[in-house]
Amino acid sequence: MEEEITLRELIEIILKRKKVLLFFVTVCLIVSIVLSFFIIKPTYEAECKVNVSGIYPVVGFLGSNTSSVLLNEKTDNNSNFLFETDQIDKDVTAMLSSLISYPYPSVNNIKEEILNPVVIEKTINELKLDPKTYSYKTMKEKISAEIIKDTSIISIKVKDNDPVVAKNLANSLAKNLKDYIVEKNKDYTDSILNTVQNLIKLQDQKIKNTDNPKSKEKLEKIKDALETKYHLLELIQESGIGSQKITIFQEALLPEEPISPKKALNIALSTVLGIMLGFFAVFFVEYWESTG
Image (cartoon, rainbow, N blue to C red; front, top):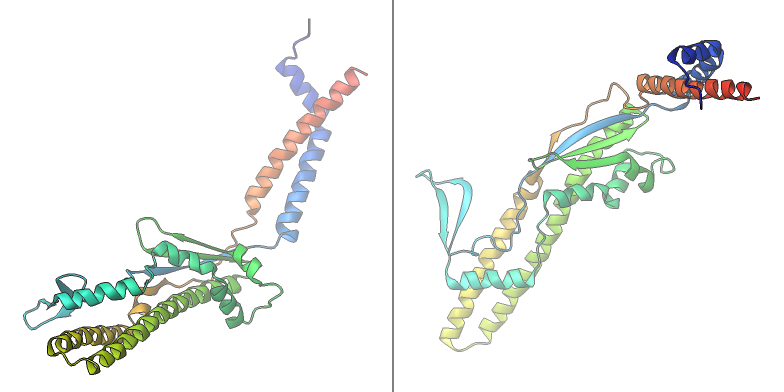
């Protein structure tokens, strides 16, 4: 029958081998202090926030319904402008929509673009960072982005050993993300403008080649509808509406305290680890000597 070890005997064993226990605790503490204070470089995190309001396709602008409203524009009667659209205008809208697939960038889509090579490479070049240290691969590991719950705000966080670089990276990334999305939308609008312009030229040619008055009248109405679309698209592009949809909600500030290493936590964990290793060593030595 095995003998039971009492609590008193356990305490006596620990006190007898306390030097072994203290040795392991001390070693773990020294290693933790050296790593936390002298070896591991501090990491700082800077955060900026980008607000994304609705970005809508412009092909269906004015004509997708029987009537269209231009919001935020007030008449003398303090009401929104209301435009009635006829069947030809709706048909033209449907035709344009089928010809051109205009993107609908959601907040989530825009969040993913923060890791777009174009955005990252432009940021590296803009800040004149060492390409050996700040490559596309290493930058991806430094950057994180998330959508703040129940909002259209994207939080962009950047980690770096230099707090100034972390701040500059976050702000530059946000600016370049905005520029990239605006330019991308502008390119799509340009393609739509070119398509509509070609359709207008085609209608002109058809009108010239038609002698039938009714056919000519219908073709002229279609041309008028196309020209209306074209001018509206020009207005949208010239207004810079794309840049108004993405705004820098909050610029990154210079981080004052590093997020890692967590020195106090590391020391506490190393103390616990040292005690555990020490206890194991104490009882192993005691067992070895008592059974030898």
